[in-house]
Structures are given as C-alpha cells and as structure tokens.
Image (cartoon, rainbow, N blue to C red):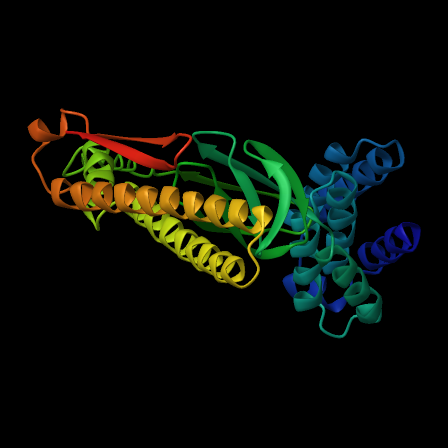
Length: 323
C-alpha cells in the first residue's frame, strides 16, 4: 500500500494537479518538495522512520498535497505514535473529501482507535489497590497498565485511608497518567473500659445467711426425728400391749406356762416401747422449745439418754435429759 501511495504522490507532483497549479508554486518550491519527498521514501525503506516523518512533513510544508500526509501517518504509526497517525489520517480525509481510498482510510482509523494505551497510576502514599471502571485490577500503585483507549474511572483504596477516585482519558496507543493523594482516616476512639461492679453483698455471707434461714425455717430435723421415734414406739407399744392382753385372756381360759411366758414377754416389750415413746416425745418438745433460742444458748448441748432395764420380776426403761 505504501508503494502505491508513493507512486500516486509522484504522479501528483509530476503532473502538477489543479490544486498545485492554483497555488502556482514556483520551480524552486516544487524541486524542494520533490527532494524532501524522495528523502522520506529512502528513509522509510531503510527503517529510519523519524527521518522519514521529518522529510514527508517538509515536503507537505512546501506543497500541501494531502497524499503526502499518508507517508507522514505511516511513519508515525511505525514509530508507535498512534495518536499522531490518527490525527494525520483524519487531516487527510478533510483535505481530500473525494479520496478514492476513503473507505480504506476509515478502516485504518477504526483499527488505530481501538489500539490499547498505557495508564500510569501513582498515589501518595504508595501501595493502593487499583480498580478501573468498578473492576479490581489486582495491581497496586505505582504501576503502568495497558487499557483500552477512552475515558476510565479510577479508584484507589488503601487500608486506613479514604477511597480516592479520579478519571483518565487513555489515548489510542498513547500514555496517560492518573495520581491521587490519599487522606488518612481518623484514629478510632478507644472503647471505654467498664469496671466490674462489685456485688452488693459478700456471696459467702449470702450463702451463710441462706443456710441460717433454712435452718431457722421450721422446727428442724432433730425435732422431726425424735417425734417420729416417739410415734413409732407408741404404736409398737400399743400393739404389744394388745398382744399381752390377748395372751392373758387365753391363759385365763386355758392356763399354761407358755401362755404365761408370752404374756409377760409382750407386756415387758410394750412397757419398754412406751418408755421410749415417752422419752422421745419429751426430747422433741424440748428441742422444739429450744430451737428459737439465741446462738449463745445453742452453745450448750442438749442430750437424751434412754436406758432399758430388765429384772427377774419385770422390766422398764429409764430416761435422762440433759440441756
């Protein structure tokens, strides 16, 4: 394609188109334009694109033929100056609206405009995470990253700092920069220290008070035990008494030694149980009466001693209460 451009330009310069004739350049100007254009062709073929761009630009300065701009654009594109190449091709279409290669030039412009560019991102302090158009990139500042050409929203986020946002217009194949100063967040206020509230009363004292209240509630275990013993002994004595009376009645009807012994034995046991019942009942009464006394009075011990006694002529029980 470049060769065809050069041929077309040579024909234009040689045949002196109507545009150039209208300007009526003199022979010196035409010779200078031809010379510059020739130098541009030679430099381009040899890969010296900077010299080629300068020579083509010089030729266009002498005679502003739009065809020369194609050489300028091609040289800039080879140098990586995509924005410059786009600008030159757009200028070519403006100066030559009836260009026969307009469709081809438009296709080249579309491809060049889609060329990714480079965005250099910096922040103070460094190390901020970068998001582009709401998408995390995984990169941190400072960094240079390729981006599609066009306008982009940049967000920088660093722990302990406010999120900073900025924008950048990345040129096709070009380079743009974005930077931001991150504002540190205020230090969080320390949480207040809550001192533990001491209990209103000593837990040990409360426990002792509870036990004391429980001990003072009712007559106490000893009273119930002695009362139970008295009741049981009374019942047992009554039963044995009836049995003794029954043996005595049987002895009256049919006197035998066995019935006499049984009657005496039942009577003896009944007497013993009645004695135990009486002693237990007395103890229960004493314990009930002394249960509400002061602690000083409780220091003296209360004791009941029950002693059964038996002899040849009978038996009994003796009780001793000490308090």
